[in-house]
Image (spheres, helix red, strand yellow):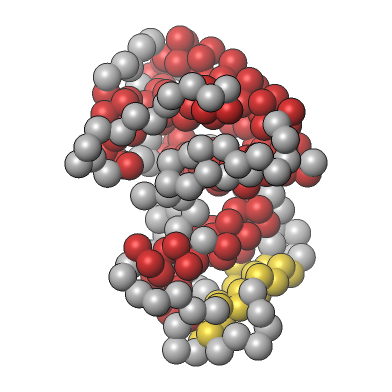
Length: 241
């Protein structure tokens, strides 16, 4: 299935970048506040290991009462923090194991995840979104090239698909929104009903960055129309929280 191939490709390019980092880069501040590059990769390793464990029916993500998702994953990272070489090998093994598990799972089986059970393809999409967002975190502070690709189509789909969830988290009623997004190749992607009263139009890269909270809506260049377009862009997210 394409999503598994695209997830692998995204991880492959991150691995190639990390393989060229020296110890100073690994221990430098990433674009993720409070985390080094090693911390970011440790988080990715931990969550890939969780995919494998949950698919096998084992307990994972036993979140402490009162902690948000962000607080919980930060605590997980702070509880370990091994040497960068150990982190790198751990993530390399975990990411391959997780993709294998997702490829081999029953396509209709819902696997437990952070907020809701997901089918393997949807879970792979969330993993692609997270790896891409953290790819920005480990490259932008160092000026390392990390160009957008048309794999963003999956992430844009995820952001649009979860808009009802995002509206709900913001304490708002969900509304239909039509998105017309332009991919890096120039392809145009449409999500939602074309006759929706509210729209978001513009760059898929900007849309995905807003959804990953790596870009402010007002700085995105995205055009919103209708009664709920601007609100949709403000609540947009490509991740669970």
